[in-house]
Each structure stands twice: as C-alpha cells, then as structure tokens.
Length: 477
Ligand SMILES: *Cc1c(COP(=O)(O)O)cnc(C)c1O
Image (cartoon, rainbow, N blue to C red; front, side):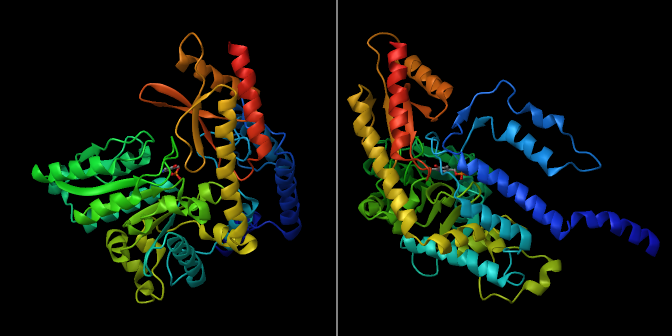
C-alpha cells in the first residue's frame, strides 16, 4: 500500500506547482491583467460578436492540462472580448462599479492563504476583519453600537437575509404568511420579490404603494394603506424603502417611512445596494435622513465602492434576531462552541464554508484610505448632473433631476413612435461600443438610463456618450 500511495503522491504533487512554475504563471497572469488595464480605454464597453463565446466549448477538460498561454488565449478571445465589459469606464448601463485592482490582490491573498472567515474559532483574525468592515459600514449609516450583519456575495442575498430575519423576529409562521403584508413600490429591485418567494412568503400580501412624480414612495399613501390593512385584520409586516432605485436612482422618504413603521410595529428594511455609499458625500447626506431608523439595510461594496463583483453587505440592528434565524449547530462543530469574542459570520448567514470576501475591501480601505472613494462618488454624482444639463441642450427630454448618479432621458422624434426610436438609439450606442447604456420602461414609456458608478467613468466618457447620442439622433431623423 505504501508504494501505491507514494506513486499517487507523485501525481498529486502536480497540484503544488514549484516555485519557478508559480513565478512563471504569476508573470503570465500579471502580463495579461496589465495588458487589460493598460488598454482599458481602448477596449470597447460592448463587443457584438457572432461567435458569442462559443469558442470556450472547444477546450473541453482533459486528463492532462494545457499551457497557461493557451488558456489565457481562450479567455481573451472568447470571454473577455465578447458582450459587456463591466470593467470599462464606458459601462453606463444597469449599475456599474468597475472593479478596482486592489480587489484582485485581496482575492489573490485570500485564495492563497485560504483563511476561513466563517467561524471565529478557526479564523479569529479573518472574522475580526469581516466584522470590523461591517461595523464600519454600520457606522456610516449611524446604526447604534452592537449592530452587525454579514458580508454577502451581493445585494440579493443581503436582502434575503434581512427578510428572513424579519420574518422570524416578527414570528410569522406558516399559518401567518397569508395575513402578513409587505409594502413596496413598483420600483423596488426585483431581488426583493425573489427573496420574498425564497423566504416562503409568496402567499403574503404585497401592496405596491403609489409614488410621487420622482418615483419615490408616497409616505401619505403608505400610511393610509397600513391603516386600511389593519382595519381589514391583516398584519402589516415589512416595508422596503429604497435608497437609490436601480431604474431611476430615487431615494424614498426614509424618515417619513420610519415614522410610519415605528408607529405600526412594522420592520423597516432599506435597499441601499446601489445608492448607500453616497452617504459618504457631505452634500448628499441630507437625502439619507432617517436611514439610521431602519431595522436592516442592504449595501453593495461591489457597486458604490467600485469593488469587483462579489461583495454585498446586509446590516441588521438586532443581531440576536439575525443569529436566531441563521445559527448553525452540528456535532462535528462542537469544538467551536464557547469561543465567541466575535460573532461568527456563519451564524448570521446561510453559508458555512465561504470565500474570505472581506479581505478585498479591507485591503482596499487600508491601501487607499476613505478619501479617494468619497471623491470618486462625488465626481460620479456631478458627472450625472453634468449629463442632465448637457443632454437637454441637444434636444432630449429628461426624467426627474438625478438624486445620486442615475439619469433618465429620451428623445422624442417629431414623427413616429418614440419608444421605437429610443430602442434604436440603444442599438446605435451598442454598435459604436465605446460606451454602453441600458433602457427601462416605466408606465409604457421607454427611457434611456445613464448610470454613472464605474470608478473609471470620466468627463471624457460622458462627452463621448453625448457625441454618440447626438450622432444617433441625426442618423435616425
Ligand atoms: C444591484 C441591486 C440589487 C441586487 O444586488 P446584487 O448585488 O446584484 O445581488 C438590489 N437592489 C438594488 C437597488 C440594486 O441596485
């Protein structure tokens, strides 16, 4: 048996590359990523390709490996050169972020050391880092000491954790689901409806509260709806306020919603996945008035702090409630009990084994400090305001004055269907490829959207978009 084992060992040792091979691979990967970043301004924001990435399928997994060179070639041609390029500053659609380089370095370190940040017993330093980050974010929105939460893969899971925690805290059991009422607006991100379904509350009542002309929840309408639901014998359960809606960038009247939630014992959750970090900008703080009165909040560092995809956060005031919904006990984990200087992330989340995803944010904040993030957010806000002014000068109609960094606009042609005209404009921008925009449909009206949140979006980028749109209109009329 020993001989057999030693034979296998020789083969399995391939999984631990030698120092020279590590160095070679690292150099090749670094050369690839340097080339990517050095040319990021020339690489298109959107690449239309007939081949559409199918080439990856021509490299099936074999018993023996391939050369790094060949693998990077596949990546370049069939992955990084088709479709949307989210790293481009020209990504002005959906909600961009960019992906700052320090994210990659943090992930690299986290992957090499493979520290476990799930349970304090195993990774006390790693868990402290994750909880330190969560407390820092809780501090930004003025949550009281003792609040905590969890670092998640993104805003969707953050919203889910909050809703599950609220469900259990408010003691909504199966038989209560039908009577529980959610209060949303039509502008709430669809991941909230998805979370409601996953949380087993699909049969609950969902009230879509009317909005004002700026797509913000009407507090007056909310108040009336809650009163009428109570009169009907229903159980007002949870209200979702948005601090930056995806479509329109609107911030709901958080303070007024807090008043109503408080008076009626309703869980107040805020979805700030897109907009939350704008609270770092002094001039925008006022818009977040009342944010600290919520019970829970979702906020995405992979949006507002420009990190690469893979980091959202849920903040929850009542840690015990979050724990009660998510804690983990298994006999094989018995050694970990009792070591609790810090609450373990695994007890506040559906996950157990997980990526040490805090390291990328910790490294970034340590390397840069907070100031460049603050400046970058203010710059993005102003770029959006600038666009809002300039786009009107070339004859476009605009939606509400942008609150954070999303602007809605459209062109109304003298004749013909305006919706079709604007859909064609999106196509023209895509064909050009230097910048990428998306559109949305509100009450039957097609709006083009500008979302400025990639850290690489500059004044020059906005000018390019204005130029492409102007040319597009000329082409179509
Ligand atoms: C992006 C977004 C989400 C979803 O977050 P993911 O990180 O994509 O899972 C939720 N709410 C809002 C307002 C968003 O912009």
